Image (cartoon, rainbow, N blue to C red; front, side, top):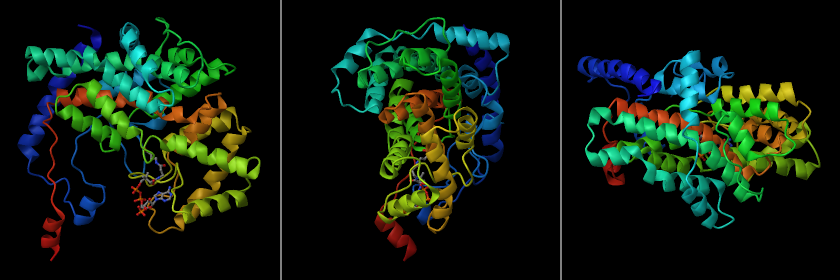
Amino acid sequence: MSKIFERLADKIELWRREAKDILANGGEKVLSEITVSQAYGGMRGVRSLICDTSRVPQEQGLIVRGKPLKEIINISPEEVFYLLLTGELPDKTELENFSENLKTRKFVPDYVWNVLKAMPANSHPMTMLSTAIIVLQKESLFAREYDRGIRKEDYWKPTLEDSLNIVAKIPAIAAAIYRMSFNKGEIIEPDPDMDLTGDYVHMLGIENADKDEFNNLMKLYLVAHCDHEGGNVSAFANQTINSALSDVYYSLSGGFNGLAGPLHGLANQECLKFILETMEKFGDTPTKEQAEKQVKETLDSGKVIPGYGHAVLRVIDPRFEAFFDFGKKNFPDDPVFKTVEVFFNVVPNELKKVEKIKNPWPNVDAVSGSMLYHFGLREFSYYTVVFAVSRSLGLTAQSVMNRALMHPIIRPKSVTTQYVKNLIS
Ligand code: CMX
């Protein structure tokens, strides 16, 4: 058994005891009461899920296993994945062992490429990613072990195997989708010696990008998007599907389908489109007045300002701050980044004037696309795929946790409109 399995086996014993004690001593305590408005309003604020991989307090933003994002922005995706899985950062030996373990799993079977190549050339890159993951489902160890009658206490083990396999392979899949979708030439094979970030950058094969700086950006990107607690669309979808004991291939692919929505992960694509359209309209980086005009026109036409607002956050997203600082430090004069900055100085004031908007501040998507754009990754329909590569860390870790804690199938109760009418009459 490799080290990560031993480490988790110890932890899981403790976590199970803890959950048992909680239920024995406080099972009847009330976490949330649900109003009619909440039922009609996307269950906003209803506390009804357990997720230990990360939390998002509305005044702080992302905290991964107790560590605020700003404390971990310099670690690697491998370290953050280990943290998500175990609740602790690895020491040097553990990290080496974990990284080597992932390196042995990175090669992708040819049938995945054949399926992707057979798809229509104008398929959205997120459709290709979701398809690639679901096609790989035949590799699921969980599905195989379940058929063999594995004990419930051990479900987490093949779930972890599946998760490690997916996380190790996803950079190669995502890079191949980039090269296929945008006619970038042959797929570049993974390098068995490279880490997740380096290999992803290598396999994307973007010419003229400063490799070291792009590597630093990608490392930050993959860490900053890794997880965002359990209630967002992709996490909730992933968790619900996985709770039916559909394996991680099924659940992650389903979660990605949610991430592909314009109100969720696709917002980074929408946001860059908004920025580039503004730049085209005004000939260059807009002035403050021009940006204000653009924001007002967008709001008047009934559209949202992409990259602003959040279902949970009520402050500037710390992920936005991390990328914004990166841009300020490394390419403050990049015209696209400067446009992001102009909007940052304008949008919150405009959104504050709209009473119904609860959070006028930027979320991560307001800036993340401009980072990729700077390094020559300019096909913005691809941006959600990079987000998904990172989010695979959190979503698979959440699935491992759910099987570790033996959470049951998710099955809330719905009511009819008539039920509500009777209630309020
Ligand atoms: N521009 C214009 N209107 C906005 C807005 C924005 N950026 N943010 C919120 N609103 C509107 C909502 O559309 C809603 O209007 P209706 O009542 O007419 O439907 C109203 O303000 C209230 O919304 P809210 O309670 O403040 O926010 P929600 O929790 O309903 O929605 C979100 C959150 C993210 C979907 C919304 O802010 C939005 O659409 N933002 C733009 C898209 C975006 O950036 N998405 C990325 C989210 C990041 C992530 O997935 O992690």
